[in-house]
Length: 323
Image (cartoon, rainbow, N blue to C red; front, side):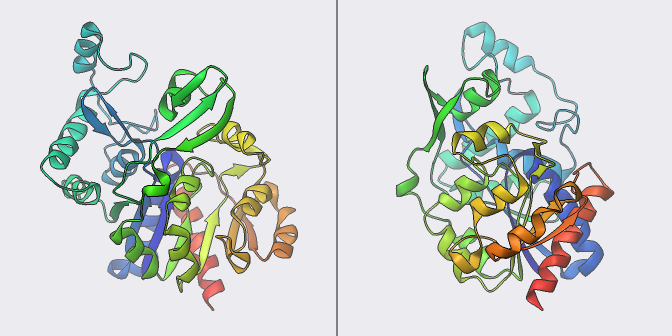
């Protein structure tokens, strides 16, 4: 059973962890999981290549993430960050932990030695038995910038420094039109038995992934059913300030509205199926009219069994769609 999931951020990392456990429980060693990750948050900072979503996914699957903060490494220290701040280097509001910095240094060295981002990610992931293949959606750089009334900010500055309190006028992925889906990501989508869309930010995580040239074509021609999991529960975006991002593109913070934004695959969109929270069960018949088969299930992604059950329900819906 080959399962490919599009993911980014903390919600994507928690879902990927639950998916690994659910797939193992259902299919044992026959489960092959590939995570195709967002790279729109990536940046060069203090001379190193930082990939926030790839790292969140890697650390969660490796079991070394800081579960309380939702990002970075457990048991982190910040001595190097203090030295950088003393020299006036970097962003004082974006702290690179010492263990985390080791990852960025290793990635940067691999890239400088000629590896592409897919190869560098594989080398980093080989350190731990993560039980999945982790892939950047593209090897090209597509940094997300946010256009505001006070200027253009890198997405991480808008996200971390302003906490999304500065109204965003639009999001721009620089270099998007010149980028291409990686060969590995295309193969993972084309060869999947199940395609899943994690409950990640619909605009800057999933939106960036599917905006990479070649991704939509790969999904459109894939033989696998595509099932998404709503990141909205009862009209609330529980993680990642998704509500502010959705408002910027004129989409209501609502499970059915996000599904409609993705669209039905039968109508040139992304989805065959969509899991909504029990609080949003009223959306199920409305989505059926759009050509999306929806089911209402508990969706709160707490670590452990709840996340595993959410993933199991997504796999079960995909199996029903596949007949």
